Image (cartoon, rainbow, N blue to C red; front, side, top):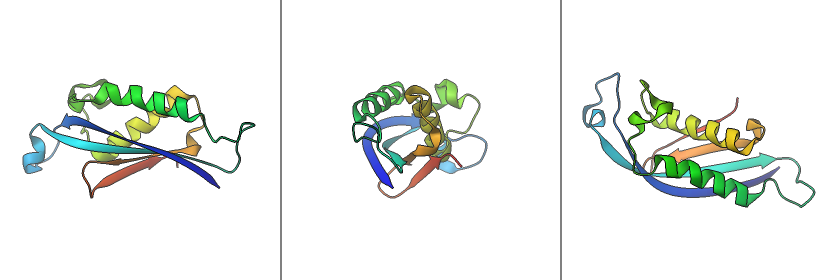
Length: 123
């Protein structure tokens, strides 16, 4: 099984809703790190899993839409708790849509600090 992964860092803000989580209910920033991993059994005719330039460009455009913004104010999180788990899935959905690929080959892991992360991949 072949795997290819890229990682990027960005800063975004959020505040949690729907429960009493103390300071997490107040607007705050996270220095996020996202890892996008593509995994497949076979390579294409050029010896690639995916065009890494397309992957990097797509992820870059997605990150730009979140960079320095408050997640709660953005459409994917309207009236939803912008949890780390939900954010990982939102990034996965946007990448699958932009790349036009089978989501089963893609996974997203998202750290909100050096120790804590959530991931999403298609079941």
